[in-house]
Length: 336
Image 1 (cartoon, rainbow, N blue to C red):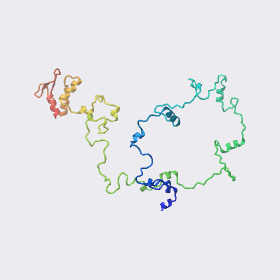
Image 2: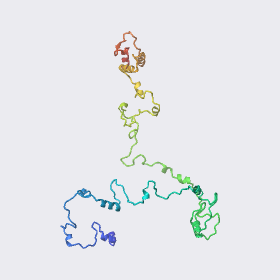
Image 3: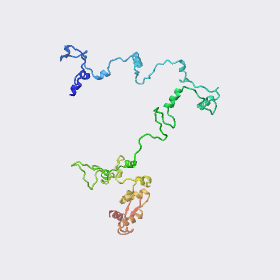
Image 4: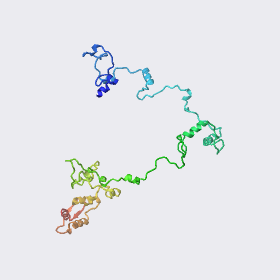
């Protein structure tokens, strides 16, 4: 039905769907043969599209041809300055020449030019009004009717034969509905319509519903579910929060041992006797202070051996470094 209705259009007849444009040209009979080679001169050889776009062995355009294209099409080479070949007078070539009207010098006007610029809306005398200028009445009436006047509505040139009172108001009188603007904004929806949707945060499709469990879904922001790697082995590009990062207090008021790279856990770790020796040597102490053994005894609930006793033993340290008594007791305390 639609094809029959559109058959009357000329575009449907001349441009049938799926076929070429029927122009009505009577072609010879041999053009319809299957072995017809087509119109035009056959190509000598098959040339790629690259050689057709950028042919080789072709002489470049002469300067006359380039000048012709430059003038007709504005075609210039890369980096070439577009010149319009204007024939300016000789005065234009002066270094002090400028286009435009020359400014009027006020050297002989004794400052009246500045006065005229400041009193452009005044009359001939200072603090006066301009003289009245007589003009056509029709032009004045047109400006009065079509112009916008301050403090008054625009004259729409609507003629009215009614004699209206001064307090007359156009339009329909407002009703007495008690609904306020706040009621319209808040609405009067029932509680059932104010509740969240049933599919909020859960899937209602059968077989794909999320059942409520005690274990939360997803990955926590603070990865307390995994063992944190050592701080010295963490990459600077790793933004994972392991829960042991320094807070805002540490960033605003860092400790005095933070610059060398020491943490609070370094002072709380259990050390061997050899590590303590290196710490005291680095601090400049020639021998282990007796407070070290007292602290070890307090930590293990024992008493350090007295010098000369059966449990007392002295082991030589490095050459010139002195001795540290009670080392066997301290090592036993560390093992405990």
